[in-house]
Length: 312
Image (cartoon, rainbow, N blue to C red; front, side, top):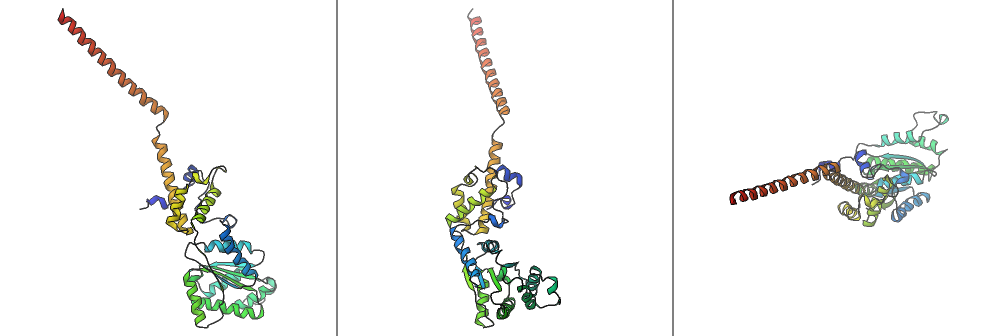
């Protein structure tokens, strides 16, 4: 059972006591500091190359916490020079009207194109394409979108493709429900929602250990300090065992181990008595022993004296 404090956020003072300037298991990290390795880079390259080849709809599927948002953030960073991007995180109450408002806000028209302020989203985007020929709509947690919203999105894209092919691109991420929703739309032949599906897998043991060390190294106060001085191999292996390579669970387990390490270090400091106190204890112990010896010697002397008196 977890100690109630082990899920709380570590304070700056606690982190400093561990040799850290920030929390290595915080979910908020700058895009250029996000972890990557050869396996993740391969998946990322597939996404970027697919966009470059005009594969206009890409769907990333993974369980919650497996790194979908990380891929979106890295893709956004890498495609910044090629696309005008609009990134949205969907919720249960998100609908097509709200999505259109997000796109119109992120992709505004200049003053000369705003003769009619009541342009439909389709005409708005057609005007925007005149100066920005490639636009990427990124929707995180797209499994929250219902079929009606998805249907309207793909219908909008299909209409735009008739006059402006390769202008509007979709990059969605979501859990299994997103795949089921798209299959259902395809089965009903409501519209063309063809897409490239990419499955995002959780980290393996080696990746998890590398990820933990990378995140700790980014946050250490001393550049010459080893990440293993914060969490050793055994602890990293236990984090993988409990998280199975899921990013969210790695962060949760990592915070628990940091709390435990801080508690142990605090306990060790308190268990070491101050040197002055130790001297007092030793001195008091020595004084007590000396008094006993003197008392014993006096008692023996008294007994000898009594014996001599009795003899005489």
